[in-house]
Image (cartoon, rainbow, N blue to C red; front, side):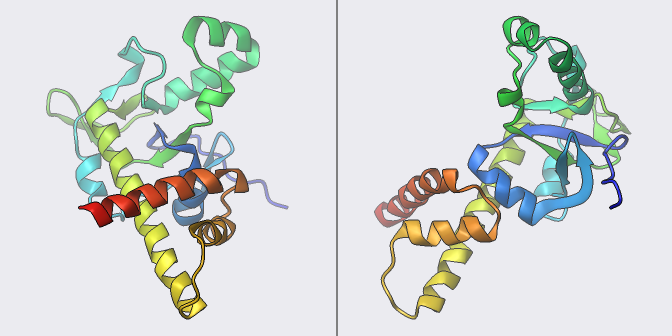
Length: 202
């Protein structure tokens, strides 16, 4: 069997995303290229993604906070190296653990980035999303995720031909199809029902 290609060069940023979305993100947006054993997510075709990726970026190796809502490829590489040497030191000094890093997904980025000075430069491994940019990308992915759940619910209802079904039943099928672990079924169901209730009330 051919060894999977590891993502060693190119533009990638690690973004913190709600854990129950990871299965769908990998299933829907994951490409063949990998970074630290995870499939890199290709997002540039999504509506609004280009505008987000053209927002101001930062070089996070200059930032004081070790773990922000986004981290550069270089910083992620440093964290992984540190965890291999001394997980206790990484946890106690920097607040970095394998569990914390598990919340991040690799996002494929364009060749150019916009610096704080408004200059276009190559998107190197040191470049990271700014806070505003990271939050915008989180919102975009969250919107895409719940739109996918809504589409799945409509299709599920059509297949059931009017039969009443519990939201959990639909979510379980959604998780099975998108290779999302069963342990996230309840969290997705709760948020799905909250969102539907807000629509009813608005």
